[in-house]
Length: 65
View 1 (spheres, one colour):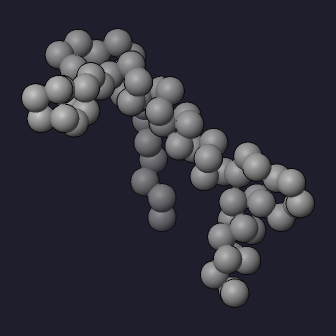
View 2 (cartoon, helix red, strand yellow; view 1 turned 45 degrees about the vertical axis):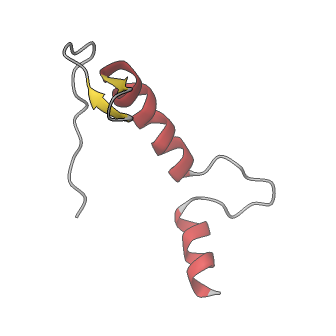
């Protein structure tokens, strides 16, 4: 499948046994740097909402493209 090969190459997942790709590392860094410190779980609506206090500055995200 050409799509699977392209995804593996973009994810730096070309070696056998590679489990830490770019996609996983990006999701993990977003969780740690923005989501976990700034969001709380609202049990009434059962979703995560931005909390009233900001504990870290918003990360700078450049637009791709």
